[in-house]
Image 1 (cartoon, rainbow, N blue to C red):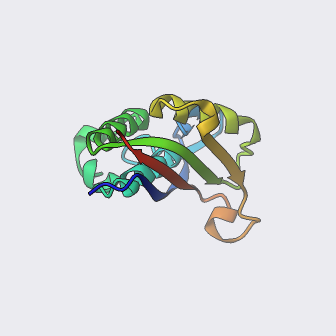
Image 2: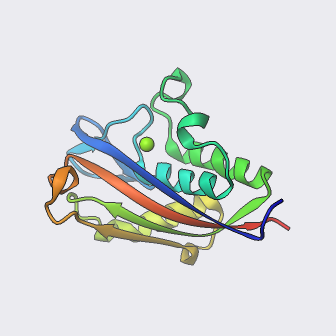
Length: 162
Ligand code: MG
């Protein structure tokens, strides 16, 4: 039985390392370090995907695209998220809105919040106003605060597709 409205939460974190491109929310950011990962390491899109999957009570991103599978080595996370959107649609749900917090000490992301929101909205076929992106530092606390990585927390709302 599918209730009319479903909420889901997603979280992801990747380590920042030298020699990788930085891609957040499908947006390439000019920065000397990037996120380590089997795919492109896009913690924002991974958290969005897990929020959608969680809301639909589907297997999580790691189950769908195992990091042991060579097929997903260097994968563009926009394509992975598009596949997730298809699975969520097949389960009878449509995304309604997305709210994201990107936890990044560096780089400063204020100028990238809108481009990231537009990028996510395009993949989810939502109006740009239905996607919100906030950027927070970790106030220098812990591994995130020393810029060892970037994390993302996402809440997604789905509605029964009827
Ligand atoms: Mg990830």
